[in-house]
Amino acid sequence: MSQQAGLNRRWFLKNAGLGALAAGAATAGAPLAAAAPAADQAFAPGPNGKYDFDTPYNRFGTNSVKYDQQIRVYGQGSVEVGMGIADMDFRAAPSITKALTARLQHENWGYLDMPASFSEGIIAWNKKRYGVTIEPSQLVIAAGVHPALIATLKAFSPKGTKVLLQTPTYNGFYGDLTASQTLAEEVPLKFANGKFAMDFEQFEKQISVDTNSFILCNPQNPTGNCWSAEDLTRIGEICLKHRVVVLSDEIHCDFVAKGQKYTPFASLPNKAIVDNSITFKAASKSFGLAAHKTAWFYSTNAGYMERIKVHHRADINTLGVIANQGAYAPEGEEWLNQVVEYIDGNTTFAADFINSKLPGVKTAKPQGTYLMWLDFTELADKINIKAMAADYNRTKAATAASLAPEQMLERYLIKNARVQLNPGQSYGKGSDNHMRMNVATSRRTLELALNNLAGALTKTSSM
Image (cartoon, helix red, strand yellow):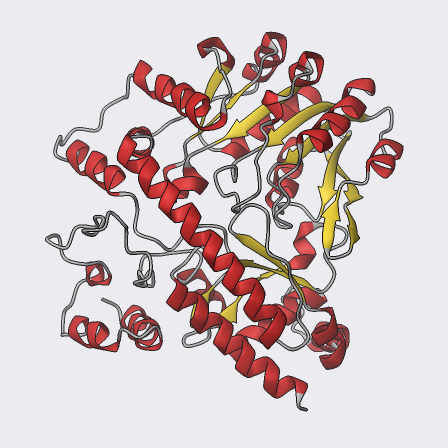
């Protein structure tokens, strides 16, 4: 293990209450794999049938974007808890590990003949879990949601035309627009009484003759909205009226809070509205499989699918297929159900803690996703984050990139709380003074992050 990885690992485990484990793993020559339990400590449900999501699972030293990239960017000792990028800190479902382990015993990695069972499993999962019927001819496999979105944008939106986005929205969409050489037409969501909502009137006003596509995020990242059937129908009617194709990214669909409901766009009763859409999904968010680069998309409109296929090529990797099949096994679904319940508890805990113990910060419990949208406006004004960003930009080295106020706030929190959050400026209009926090982690890790923030912000508020 490198010295940096070892230090980060011991630091994390000590502060998460696992100092003894860290000390035991710190012996000379301990391999990087020491971050994970030994082979005879296989992850499995306990006698009560419950999985242990409370024990922190260290990811330092695994080239993780959420942890190791932050150390690379901000320096050794800078980040104690990564609460940014949207992947989970939990150990994978045992059914996934079992499937991958079995395939690894065959030591040949030639070309894969895609098994019919892969698509059949996706179709069965969507029918059972969401009540959506997908015909085999309607389904296309992709090497991630982004390549699929880019191919679809190229099919419907010529270079230089506009793509509607309801902001704040997932910042990755902007990269898809860059790749397809299209332009963002941002329509801010309305915000009232602590809740975000679609602004249908403004949405329709901003549709022009060169607007061909709309990327819908359902559930919405980062605001956490689970859009109702009424919301989706009304926005679908507007798009159909103006010949705007709906690209519905539903990758967060499994993470829905108790008492809330996810409505697939493809489940709407109006066939014409549904026929004017393409839905994009993956197991990557639900099961923590982002590194496996496997996704899919489907539409009831055969003509739309043929147009997309012209621009689409999927180079699928064998382990991605195996991991997805393991995820959709019965044991995988039980693991997911427990993860969703656990994260729902995390969002409740985090919302209560933030609103009562973080001076100058406000948030609301999300209806869906495992992401929380934090409003730092009061704190940002108190410390004059805009002036701090302006001072930095005025005195920075010529080769350094300029910083937005939210990026300066990110650095402020890293310096004072050693917690990394995603800065809001990249999520489009309406994101001023906001940060995105990922709570798909152990409760002990979440408590560590929130306590660090509370300590730092309490000191700031007393200045």
